[in-house]
Length: 408
Image (cartoon, rainbow, N blue to C red; front, side):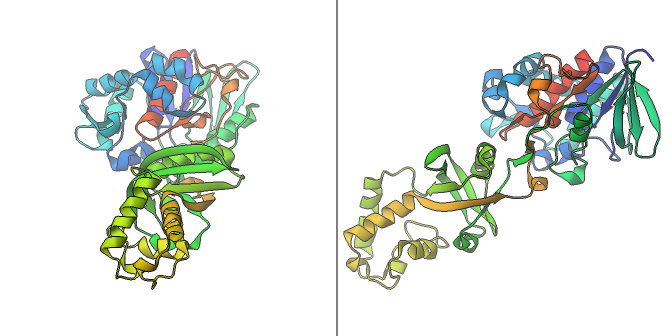
């Protein structure tokens, strides 16, 4: 049973780990509890699969939110160019889109999965589907015993855990790997959703459901300390806010979960307070004989106007030419500082990725091997690493999977 390797989890990290180990002539078995490989990968990029990002390796690392230094060795050992060339060798051509995002030319995530399956087949990896691991145990002879939910037992020299996080649980990512790691004495850092919409306390937000705002500035504060600021697109929902900028923000504020978090939207970031006041004055002169409620259509989306009026505490029936200078300045402040209170994240099952996982201090960053149990390796989202959207999280999966497969 020399060099018999078990890889648990048939996502991108597990597939790359298994094929890499197989390419070295090792006897590799890949176990997946679903009826097919890459179930979560199939959903990425809205079914198109944002394979990776075309930026320089340093740019990719800059987009890592948690434990970026841990990933240096992995990202330089198996780069974005490596995964692109690998997929091309198995029939998948790629293209670059906005933000350096890499997609298959076909726009089909299924083509990426098929290519990785061909890679596994070429490296003679045995794939076992519908096989769920119940627990793993290290024996006195340094072998691992894997017990499956049907009570079957199998024995291996090395084990790679690539079971994913706790998001999109319908794809099989139910946190099994955290239990396996804990059973071996590994620490699991706080598991929280990342790249996730946010729930907001204020009731008026619900009235804006469906409204999308482009090119706004969003900031987040904890006790008056700014912890996030960026420009982008925001979407109001029945529970709060979503959209690309909110997903990004969530990855930065989740470490402050439990604190009072204030979110501030600058609706007119291209205009200074002074220039915005000049703009409002111009509109007020144009609509001087109209009521306040009928004077903001040139400035704001129609759905937002009643909310701004309500928050301004100015009577909506007041005529524009009666609005005072102080009231006008309050409108400017409101448009530049639309405040709301963070209530909670949406459930972790709705998150794109999981924040937290197997503590990186307990994993050798150059091999992905456990520092606690010899012969045990980790790859992908089960580790306490995650990144922003744009293909970076999938690159984490490939790169850590490659190192695990190379060193097991």
